[in-house]
Each structure stands twice: as structure tokens, then as C-alpha cells.
Amino acid sequence: MTLFEKPVPQSDSVIEDRAMAIRESLRNAIIDRRLAPGTKLSEAEVGSLFDVSRTVARAALQMLTFEGLVKTERNRGAFVSNPSPEEARQIFASRRLIEPGIVAAAVERITPEDISRFREQLREEERYMTERGPAARRAEIKASGDFHLMLASVAGNAILQRFMDELVARSSLVIALYGRSGISSCGHSEHFAILDLIESGDAKRASDLMLHHIDHIEADLDLEPREGRGLRDALLSS
Amino acid sequence: MTLFEKPVPQSDSVIEDRAMAIRESLRNAIIDRRLAPGTKLSEAEVGSLFDVSRTVARAALQMLTFEGLVKTERNRGAFVSNPSPEEARQIFASRRLIEPGIVAAAVERITPEDISRFREQLREEERYMTERGPAARRAEIKASGDFHLMLASVAGNAILQRFMDELVARSSLVIALYGRSGISSCGHSEHFAILDLIESGDAKRASDLMLHHIDHIEADLDLEPREGRGLRDALLSS
DNA sequence: TTTGGGCAAGTTGTATGCAATCTTGATGGG
DNA sequence: CCCATCAAGATTGCATACAACTTGCCCAAA
Image 1 (cartoon, helix red, strand yellow):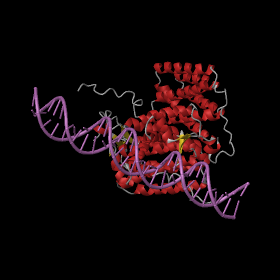
Image 2: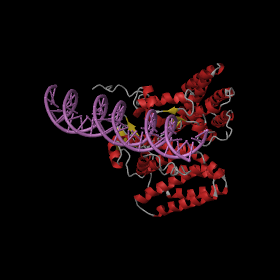
Image 3: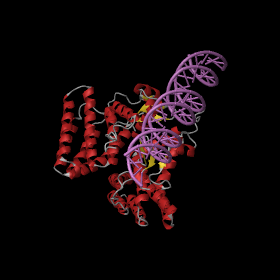
Image 4: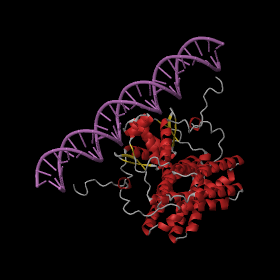
């Protein structure tokens, strides 16, 4: 009757269905490394854990499979993805290709309000950096990824944003897997510098710095060939 | 007992499950425009059409939703995607970002055998160009997309390859929707020129030409604002 | 005639049951 | 002692049943 009959579509991605919520929850658990790579994600277990049927759990796992965060083998089930060094390299190669363009687009579209939010986000990052312990380190990885995601959202291209969603999530998993201990601190100051260059409107230098930033992240990884891995990494990793 | 006990894992992506086959079939139908944008894809109808249960049909539709080829609305169902001009622009912006890098990678990795296969593919394209009629035009769009996909596969980055899969599929839909009649012929000669530059190892010029090529494809589209569309394009389009 | 409400048909969301496949542990033969 | 075969348990793949929601129609009332 009234014009506001519907209770407002809300943020659209928040409502969705239950499968999406489970996907988010598992996704966070995976990139936080609370779920170790290779962990079996049985439909029944996920279902009972979230109090839904296997149907819904299965849908969530299917979504995560599309994102590359879990790998499913026919008639065997779903496992937390255990990205190989080669996969890791491809992930960062993809980011090197995409993110400079995102920075350039962000330079064109960013607003002063956006800049404020970014600085807030960077302060948040800073807090985790001062702390020690694995929990803080996980939070730092996540916050660091959020910077890149915010940049992608400012760039105003929904498709690239979705690609970045996937790439950042998989990067977080890779960093948790192959990252050396404490060197990622340099990355944070680069976030500040990138933001400054974006604010000043210098697209070229901002893009270049983003490129270097990604190089630095990848350089801090320990991506040796790791002989003997490639057979069935999930089984042999334990 | 014998070393060949298992009947060979086969091409891996060919086997998969039935949902994948349905996805492929629907995907081809959509980018061929045999399924018009806005067409309702009811789970029951898809299921009975392919002689599977709604469960499998639903999985296929979910995959297509991830690819952006269909749009699903909660409790309302799945519809063939009807990309807006803005979406189309984002698709091509994404391609402009990614494909030059793919060309550069392909220059490094392409083999003489690959080049032969490419020339074969281009000859195929040529055949469809001489013919008239909507069927030949659809085949031409598809063959033209295949060139870009083959390039992505040569580049050797599985992630970028998957991104390109999605972008090319959505581009085909956009071209079918917004393409002007016969101007796409210039694109074909550019494919030849790009391949020549790749063969000669000139990454820079090959990438630049790819960039221009994408510009030309987009320039051949009719992407006016189309007032009055943005409300609920699926409903109002008919 | 127009508007509003309510019922009915159809579709999607979810749960569950059954068959097929894989894993695992046991058992028997070499 | 080792290896192969096989049976039991468990898990996935798929189909189907039911519940919840949306939509469109019809009819009544203004």
C-alpha cells in the first residue's frame, strides 16, 4: 500500500541468502588461516556447523571453489586450497597487470571523503602492526588487503572489483602460507605513499609505486620450487 | 595392478559433472543470442530440457550467474543477462587493462606450433566473414572471441585465462546486443596483424595494437545512454 | 469503471532420501 | 612378512518432496 512497503533492499550484498553468509564466514576463516590449507570441508560438517542442510552448504562451497579458495575433487569433496608457488606467481602477475590500472582509475574518481576513509583504514592497519602475535599478523594481512579492495571499489569498475576480490583473497592465503615473518612492514608505508600520490593526482607515479608495492609483497614470499610437493599437495602436506 | 589401472583422467575440464555441460550449452546459446537477453531460465525448464533434476540445473545457473551471463533475483529466478551500456564499458575497460599484458606474456611463450594453430583459427574466422546472414555473423563473433581466448591460453596464466573467459563471453553478448552491422571486418585484419607482431617478438607494438583493436571493437558498438532503461532493465526491456 | 483484497497457480529455497563412489580396515593367500 | 582382494562405513551426486514466496487473476465494493 504505502510507498515503503518493502523494508528497503538494504545493502544488497548483506542480505542475499544464507549460502552467501556461509561463504563469507568460511572465506574469512580461510584467509585468516583459521582453516589450514588442505583441510577437508565436508558438506555435512559445514551444514551442521551453520545449521543448514547440505544443499546450502554445498552452494557455499561451490562459490568458494569458483573463487579458487577451495578445491573440489569429484566424489571426494572440498578442501581448503593449498596454492602452489606457481599459482602464487600467477596471482601476483595478475595483480601487477590489474592494479596499476585501478590506481589510475581511482585517481580520476576519488573524493575527499574517500581519502578520509582511506586514512582511517591505514591508521587501523598501523595499530595491528605495532602488536605482536599471530592474531595481530592475520589482522594486518586482512587490513592490508582491504586497502587494495577499497581502491578497487573507488575505481568504479564492478568487474575489476570482483576480480580484485578474488585476487586479494587468494593473495592473503598465499601470504599466510609462504610469507616470511616481519618484513611486510614496508608495505604499509607504501600504502601511505600510494594514497598521497593518488591524492596529488599523479596517476603515473601512483601506478608505478603500486607496481613496486606488489613486487615487494611478492619478494617477501618464500616461493621455492618445494620439490616433491606437486603430487597431491593436500595429502602430502600434513 | 598395472600402471594404467585408472582409465586416464582425460582432459579434466571435459569430464567434470553434468552441470558443467549444461553451463557450456547455455553459455553458447547466450553468446550466440539464441537465448535473448531477459529470457527467463526457470530451473524446471532447464532441468527438463537437459533431462536432469532441478538440483543440477540450479548448479549450472549458479555458475552462469558467477560469470555474469545470467542475473538471478532472489525468489524470482534466473534471467539471461541484459548488460547495460555502462556494464559494456566496464567490460571493455577491463579488457583494455588485461589483454595488453596477455599479449606481452604470449610473445614470451608462443611456439611455432601455436602460431600454426592461430593461423588456422584466423582462416576459419575469414570463412565466416565472407558469408552473410545472422548465423554466419554469430559464428564470426564466436570465432573472433576464440582468438582472444587462445591468446590467453598461450599466455600461461590460468587466472587471467579464466578472467578472459568471462570477459570474452560477456563481450560477445554485448556485441550481439549493441553491435552495428558490418564494421567488425576491420577487427579481423587486426587479428592477423597482432599475430604477426607477436611472431616477430615485438611485444610493445603487439600490445599497442591489441589496445587499438579493443578500442575499435568498442567503437563499433552503439552505446548510447538509452534513457529510461536503468530502472529494472529486464522488465522494461520487453 | 476503477481500485483493492484475497485466492490460486507457479516458481524458487531448502531439506532429506537413495544410489553411486571412494576410503579404510580386515582377511586370506603367496 | 607382504600384498591383493573385498566388505563396511562414510561421503558425495542427484532426485524429489515440501515450505515459502511471488505473481497474476478474479471478484467485490466504492
